[in-house]
Image (cartoon, rainbow, N blue to C red; front, side, top):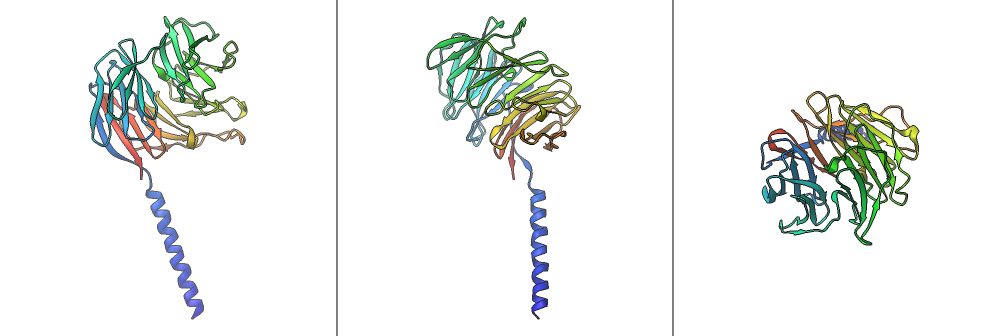
Length: 320
């Protein structure tokens, strides 16, 4: 009798395990909401606020919108001559017709913000700003000391104004910029000593840095994603997505990146980053999101994500 009960217990346990595996297999990214940008054009920049309640979207015609996701309502918007610098926990930062502005995420209220150049990026703590003068000289500006710091860099004809071509490390100690197929990296304490990375096979479209710039991520035309390891070059990897890699976002907390591509490759996926202490010859297989059509921008915040597409379409995803 005891043996029968024991066997029945094993069968019940096995059934529960199978059920658990089945549920785990069904856990994935689900499309939960769609928004429409103010213009019927490619949404090329997108940024979910840290709390997941608001979203900023920018399109290639220079239009910019700030959304309350739960209410499906636009809080703030401009139709042209803007670009998006990003969001922090309370504000969206943008440039509107040459004027830097801070927009309150909760209400859409705005205020001008003084900057001594054309800004292209802001560090996570707001201390350092990066910008260009006449698109030929890269500068850093310390918002606490009000000091301008020029960056020594290889010659370039013109720097692009879109922030996707620049990145601060989340700890605010490193800064990187793109020059066509090349990435240049600076330790902010050594502005005259840049590190030039190996050229990409195609023109770089997006850039991101992990917390202390251990990894530099660069996506390019042709679908390559270079994951360069600063502290251990042997741990560097190159993933290939096919098509053109047009969108990139780094979730440093979970050590993963989100990438979006044109129709020719994997449209949208999440890539686990390598462990630099254990170099591997093969990059991890990305988790694919069920998107059809091109992806021009993406953002990943823990268990919530957003993606931008042609014709003003914005998709909101949740892990469920």
